Length: 168
Image (cartoon, rainbow, N blue to C red; front, side, top):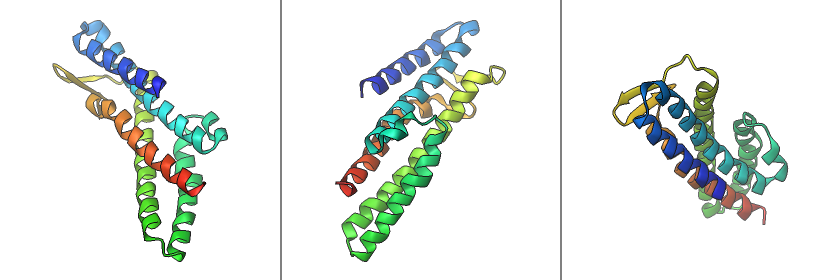
């Protein structure tokens, strides 16, 4: 997980630089922090997708939510039906939990990408420095962006573990 962790550290560094930067530079540091927070999430998701199907790791960023909501969720739904037929209560619980993880993952990826797009392509949308050590962009608090990587790591582990268990 070296690359994802590095992105997270760089994002945090940029976040702290934004807080201490001059008026002229803090917007650029803040935008760069959101960009790096997004990429830490993206890289972790790409790693999971690669483990599940090597072809999925080369998909464009915007395709990840579609694949997660589509092929991956349908796969788990099909396996849930199979577990119900086999009356495997433990597997049912695990798959249901994994399907919730997929939905949560999609929500974070979508939100993070929306923030990245604003950070990268909409310079007229201001970063809102709400206090001495906090700011937001596109209604995304920097503390929320900072938390994405940890949440995504847990969610990806859940999805990948169940996928592997089913596809043994």
